[in-house]
Amino acid sequence: MPWESRRNRRNGRDPRRPGLAALERLEGRELLAYTPLGFSLPDLTISGFAAPAASWGGTLTVAVDVRNIGASSLIEPLALQPGAPSTADALPTYVAVYASRSPRGGHEVQIGQFLTPYIPQNSAVQLTEALTLPSRPPGLPGPGGTIYLRFAVDPDGILAESDYTNNASQKAAPVRIEAPLPELTVTGLDVPPVMQPGDVIQPNIRVANVGTAPTSPQGPVTVDLVASRTPTFGPGSAILSTFTVANIPPSGAVTLTGAPVQLPTSPGVYSLGVVVDPNGTIKQLHTVGGLGGSGRRFSLPRRVGPPITNLPPAGVLIPGGASNVMPFPIPSGIAGGLGAPVGGTPAHGLPIINLPTS
Image (cartoon, rainbow, N blue to C red):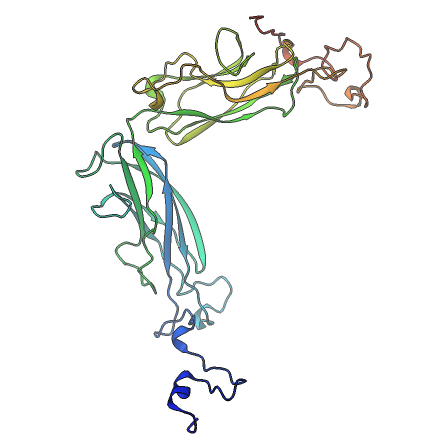
């Protein structure tokens, strides 16, 4: 007001009138996503990550999240119908992948690119792409070194956007450069949570290749389901089931589902686990330079036992029906003895296996 001092007028509030709200400063407002041209524009951002290891000339799997944070804040005359295209939608473009030897950037080399789809306003898509790396570019490290990936969406600025400064990923994704070899690991072993000797189970095993090369050039991969007194594969172990896998690609995985197997009936307590490539025929990354383990410990070991009093071994392939329902509580005297599976006998005449005594 004219009677206020210059300082009070500049501050927008008179201290003598505490109930008067300060005038709103437009410079500090979150303004509507509307341009001076009279329509909204898309705004693309990107983030991503990659497989932990790769080799020059091999395959590298990357995954990115591309977001269109642009949105129409006012009704557009040409997009009144729900689901109609908006000027804030992003048209198809592409993502470029750059590699450098430092997480802060610097000397960068483009190692690949892939297309992105149409992205509506206020939406996001996740894309996974397998890139074929070139031969080692000058200035980037070889085996044993680390490169850092940066992703940029619409790097050439082909699309009209409200902000181009956020088109590149803010955090670099590290990738270790290794020799072109596979690296096999067991990522899953699905068995009952409680097992006792003599049970019939149907295991599901998942094996992943986190290395930089497929396994097929070295031959098929052998995967064994093993029982042992200790969680180590050795002379005192019993192989319960064997699987053969023709090939596991880099950054790939397989799920193995075999026939039911009967667990050893003795001793009362032992370990069940998975051993990949028990004969050591597949050269892997961890074996380069003699770094492989010598104990051959189980992957994802599970405990079997001790036997539960008056509870017979359980089977998984028991015909259904009222005639095969076991009463509860389980009676102490069961036809066929306590060694008979609940509800009948195992299918396929599974053999009974006992672990070696020593």
